[in-house]
Image (tube, rainbow, N blue to C red):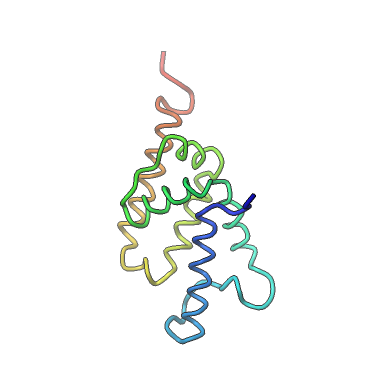
Length: 135
């Protein structure tokens, strides 16, 4: 059974592709490559670990909803995002991927979609707030 979710694998693929861009001189400010000699940074490990709480399908839904705006996140994936991944990891993953040149030009739209995905998922999980319906 795979230990990384689709988001984790996507992040690692982006890191590897960024590494290749650095090696051929296309990008000078890409994130630390995961295939560089030596161990992965603790931050990359943290992102891979927190992203691994989503299944590949949920990772794809969340990623596509945030970075391309072409999917909605299902109730089950929202539940995983809110309860297993958490807001800090969600925000950190989004910010990390925004360091990649491919997404920088759309930073404002991506951050808005990221907040909307979180808000919509959190609302599904707690439709009346974390304390339940008001009496």
